[in-house]
Amino acid sequence: MKSAGHIPPYLGESRHVLARIETPSVKVEEMEYAPGFCAVRHSHDTANFVYILEGAHWSGYSRGGDTCVPQTVRFLPAGEPHENYFPVGSKCLHIELRLPILKLASAEGPVLQTPGEVASPWAPVLGAQLHREFRQRDNVARVALEGLSLQLLLAGARPKPLRRTQIPPWLLRVREMLQEHGTGDLTLEDLSRCAGRHPVQVSRQFHHHFGCTISGYVRQLRIARAQVLLARRDLSIAEIALASGFSDQSHFANAFRRLTGTSPLRYRLRNSKAGA
Image 1 (cartoon, helix red, strand yellow):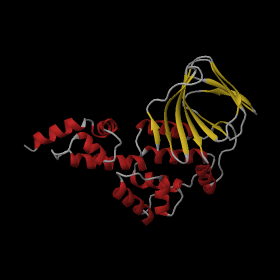
Image 2 (cartoon, helix red, strand yellow; image 1 turned 45 degrees about the horizontal axis):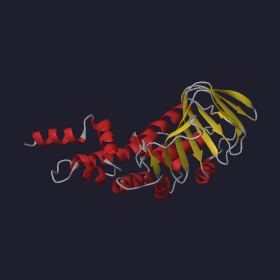
Image 3 (cartoon, rainbow, N blue to C red; image 1 turned 135 degrees about the vertical axis):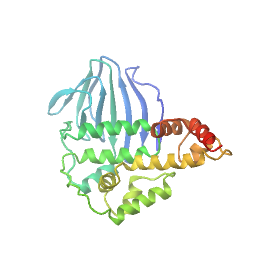
Image 4 (cartoon, rainbow, N blue to C red; image 1 turned 90 degrees about the vertical axis):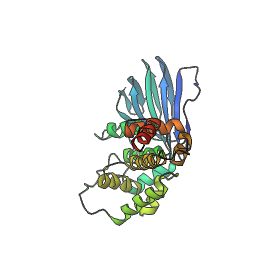
């Protein structure tokens, strides 16, 4: 995964790439557009999703045009001519869909083909989840970004209802794999191969049976490991962050605070007093 906290502006300050995460299957960028920016008619070699975060703008396609409002998801097939006008400042999340993920989606069901707003009622929910995962900036986020992008591509297909049944053995194998390698670099493809199931099925069944996403489960495992290591006085916070699977101390501190409500240092001090 390639990630950057800030990428320099281009196109004369009218458009900025604020941050980026890349995997072999998707490239996700948070974009900021200046008021008045106009992108003349053009097309892309790859299919794309756009989740609008702030500021409505106008988009024109081969079939017409419409207004793109916040908390909606747009789809652009590869090669689709389009143009955009941003009358006010705007922020969007762009998801470039590469060949591996398009092939995976096609193997599961009919994928989106029509440009414009994704009509599924689940699309805004999936878009918001994509943005939340993108903001995590950790190596677990890429699993979630690929899984959510797959679900969006299949938004037109009706998912089979899931019933409360016994946890299938293949899903237990996935959980065991996460427990064994939770601090390492796993991909959705790794988990799918371990399960012998399609990635969409792995993601949906995991959430259904265990009550959390795969990425959320891994973060819980990492924080639990960190809590154990914080009891050791011979390890620094930075060393514990790396040993728990976090890329740096800042990401570790943010994730720890989100899940426990306190900082790693305060957790260590509080528990050392309790054990005194």
